Image (cartoon, rainbow, N blue to C red; front, top):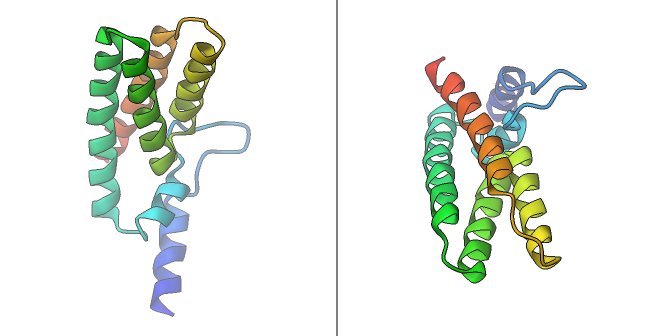
Length: 126
């Protein structure tokens, strides 16, 4: 019974964005994966923000396509893990561009990561 109450509290706290809007991080998804542990949620968000920033910087310096693909794959997995669907989608689009022989649009990806970082920073200030 207590577990259901904790989950209900977590769901209420992270009800998610209003219909028709999309938050950079799906907090309901994150809550499910952290079992409603707020401290763990905050730590995971902090780690994602640092990692995402680092990965984008490394992508901009990547010397070859194979390295860029590995970095995109890592960012994609991390983004999906926390529910950063916009970042995950942007990483997937860059992978698809490479598959089609086009260059990755790293400024677009970086902008999506920056949006997620700003959202995370605002959450962590609460």
